Length: 206
Image (cartoon, rainbow, N blue to C red):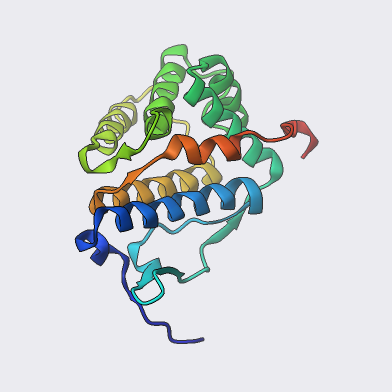
């Protein structure tokens, strides 16, 4: 165990805009690398897991106890889901969502469509060209409202697998931090590199 310095990440709310943008760009880039390159994701979105060294302008990452490995097949399906959402290809999203386990062949169509709607909404910040302004974003309240609506539907009972829920939590945590910092991040540009995989590993091979 070692002692590290730095200040709480949320204190950057008072930093210049370009610094807030830079830090959040680094964090989103790291998450995409964790999922698609390392396939080892630190799934705890607590702000206390990040500090910022004001002298070196470097991020400090803490507490790796919540790291979770992801199989190549699962990472591949999340890549497919993001690609489908960014391209407006709901057929691609449907294939990926079923492979991940958001629903199965017995799920009613209107429930499937609701989940796909939520997937598109969650990826919305990645679909816009240029920097996405989290300072004016209402994506999380809209997602919350749709989630409550689905949760109150007694005809729908299926929970996504833990891999999916933990990844959702991590993305949601970064969205919350970006909103707190009023950051502007070009997420589409970040994602394009990670989504251009040489090939997609078929899920059944893993």
